[in-house]
Image (cartoon, rainbow, N blue to C red; front, side):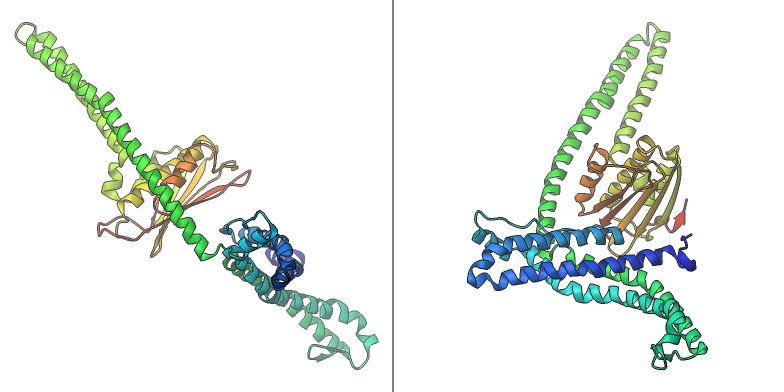
Length: 428
């Protein structure tokens, strides 16, 4: 349940109103940075602008970075920042590099739009609350001194009835402003998210570079996996099968002279064949679990939940058609790794797993009640998941404050492909 603040209003409303006030005050800094950068551009023909532009662009970038961090906190969605501002060996070369940087022009466009968009969005709830406070908190005490020309909005405040009407109108305006504040703060955060995310050219360049890196990584992983399979076959099943053949030869030789010894050797053959079969099953399971092939992602994740000693709840909303097999495999092993992390490192007791799919993306959310503080750059588990997802241009977002809870959200671009049926829209 949401907490309540002063007068029964929700605390979230007051927090949002404070954010609107912060946006309004910070707008002056944005205007100053934008005017400084714009002034440097106008001074370029005089030569002075070449000395001023690098410092002005740096100030504008620091201001925009602060807004990016704030928008990420308010929306819960990280922004993709532009590339760092280019530098030159001299003021003229540095300015020339900045003029050719898409990120600078991206920031400058935002700085010129922010006072109009953010200023208006923040001003509406603030104006309603402040004007409402004047009607509800000031008019009842000063209306007798202001005389016959005292009006509050459309209400003449010249009598007790007029004062009470102004008081009620003020309370309505305060309530409206507080209810409107979260909407305006959210709209501003979303607009900032869109305006300050890295330019499309930068995103495309990064995507191409990331895909090239993940392709090379995938090839290396594939080669390493083939080597591992070959080694496991050689040291495991193959060695047992060779021993099985030698034991069969010995048992055959003893059948005529020592049937009891031959019988003992045949029992050893049966045990060895069972171990070889288990080795092969373990090897296949590590490559692609049979339940994933036969039943699909939903039932495979439920199987992981049943095998875990944690209290795991799985909520599934997937289409009847099967997802591409590589995508299902990536999601399955990612969930398996996250469950292991929750039990081994986070000291969790409960995990909630949600699988959903829209027209283009598979989304997997894993939340545990552990102690939090997970570092996505440490160890091999989370970086391994990220490398696995990078192959599909997928993403891993981790929210793990100290004290928990920890939420890992995976998104993999994909579409339903196979007409095979799969259990979906159910809760385990």
